[in-house]
Length: 399
Length: 134
Ligand code: SF4
Ligand code: SF4
Image (cartoon, rainbow over all chains, first blue to last red; front, side):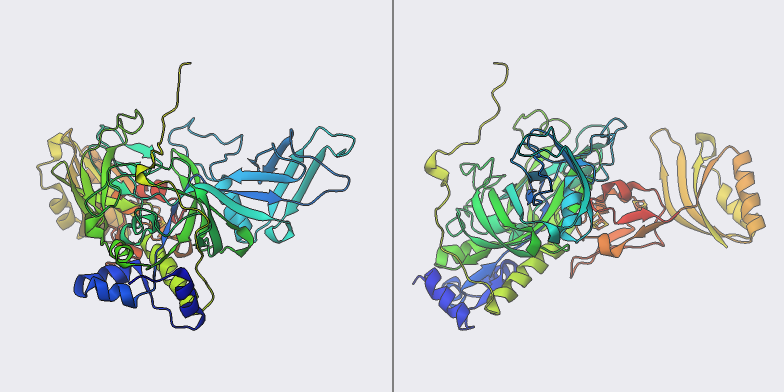
């Protein structure tokens, strides 16, 4: 017997909704009948907290007097360049933006101390930001320069808009070469010295709804400590990858574009990141509720770490050169134990994604729902299915 | 007093009982934090020496005269708890297991006693939660 979102929302309102986290359901399903659980449980909450480089924020500063137009000029926030291709006093700053005078990798590996991700963190934390604008001046926007300090509360809008977040599964990165390499998956020691992963595994939102039956356009979510929405499917969306028996993609597949009000967000869940030798990023906390509309959905939410597999990829050659080669698969149970067997060697593991924080987020979302503060949404539109023919393409070069 | 050192022994000294001789001669206590032989067959010891300042200094001088290279570990590493997100990116970088994760609550901890201040974890931490104190 199925449930509807409307029925579940009614239960939330009456304080009767039964909510568990994806970690709890993985445990429960080992002992109890899935049919019975599907009838009893209304919502499973998920969570993830890791660096998501394709993130950024739209800002509107309000007009100066006389007026100034950023578009076609230059704009810096704490010395980090932002986008100057929008009208008047709108901009967008991305997590990976780097100050022009940053030495980058000229002394490899660069430390990338401060960038777009840190500007966003500082805004959320309520810290003052230096705003500098250089403009060419027009009859209607005569001012040529602004140099002032701003805070998040002084702005009109601050909209977090991340074109690609929440990867459904991800590579485990290793290094088969003879020297240490510095990647967005962290520092990789030579000759399989370590294996780094970046997923919350059994708590990760898109691993628990592998066919995106409940997550779509308009899904309301936990985003950075506030509420946000799924705004579109994410860039590099790739639903047709190989799947394991349980339906879960065995490699990076679906992604989400997310949107939310930065002013609602909390510094615990939005943090700048410096990845040595790579660049800056933004660590984003995301939680997605999955309504248990039927038994299939419950079965998917209950898949434990031991049955979720990630491909192992050599970041010294196969990743940068797009060879498509993988070195095998390991499951998140092994990865989380601190050691995984790769190419017959026991390799220490590290994660870029915090499982502790993912847990905290799934728990917080659970509290919001049981407390009656958070209602579920009906999808406005579903995203492309595995058999839709939707494909992820490589760049056309040399034309 | 206690001081930590990284001592590199050339191939010719690797098999000799140098440390135990010195320790006896200058009545020192010592604690080996890590010991390994490099591919060039050079021996490396990370150890904490305890004794009077004068005796530790003389022992270090004797070691140098025998051809050992010695680095004193003067700085310390600290974990800034508020900046740590408990991700575990630093853990596999640490050569002495001074960084570890609690199996129950998944929080990451730093054991200053084990740390040899090699600094490897500092570069690995995305939120700059690991810092040199000096
Ligand atoms: S500095 Fe960091 S990596 Fe080096 S021993 Fe200490 S904790 Fe371990
Ligand atoms: S890498 Fe940094 S943030 Fe991650 S667990 Fe280690 S100290 Fe904490």
